[in-house]
Image 1 (tube, one colour):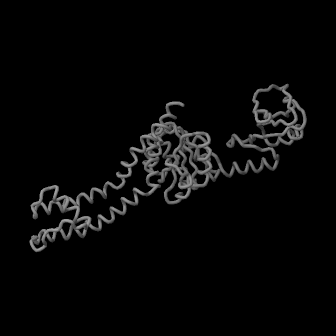
Image 2 (cartoon, rainbow, N blue to C red):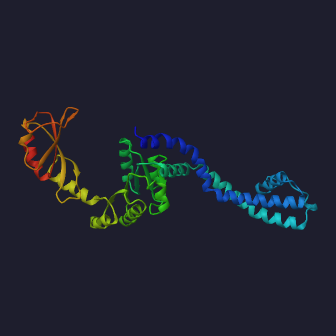
Image 3 (tube, rainbow, N blue to C red):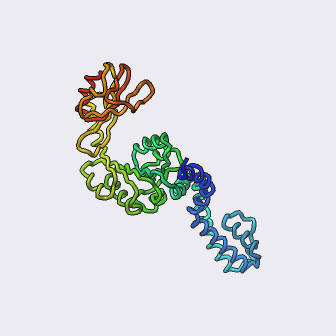
Length: 339
């Protein structure tokens, strides 16, 4: 396990559990300060007019703000100025206190808030990770694959549109925020990330995010999935290292599948010539050298074992499978040769 993996997988999870409560408090510190000011004003009033010591005055101020009523001076002996000031502070403070308590409780018990706070802290401190930016169902598929590959990642998705998607991911590495915001991207760890994958539904938003990523970290590898293939050059100019057209990929695979039923995958989607990975079941004994020109053998599958080592003279036996790379137009000839 390298240093980055130890840092991301062991040290950060330990530290974030200590830091997360502090980060949550930071979200409500303005309300806490306002509540403290209200208590302080009441305490000063009690010190001035009731001649209480500071501890007693603060205790009395808290009673007024919370309406507990454990301390209440004789109303008939209170000066008019004190009554007026306390009346105003009670009117303001009670409503403020109720609002603050509700906000604090909602913040502290909200699972998404805790996860978002931890994800932002984690993202800022991770190294060599992948940032997934998107607001579609593709996020779920990408996350499942990254988990299987043990890749460290942070997901950045929109708050209003993708709450359900974020809940389905069920992790504390999901940031709910606007990917077009610099601070949100920095929270995802764009400075130390290995690469960023942008899969937004709106191509124009994806373009803006690409520009933001390049501004914040020019060496970062940016991979963008787009819907409108006519925008490919625009994304390349914006700094995207790899632009994948969803329509183009689906179209190529569909067209290739119409030519051959042996399609297993597509590579080099940006090149003019389609390069398809095909798998063929061997039902006739042949040698590698018998394959047609333009077809590159990649591996031979023998039972559950993949054998990438062979020569032109290697014989393909019945029951084996051959994995090849080539243009799908040549697959019919390979199929006739092997099957």
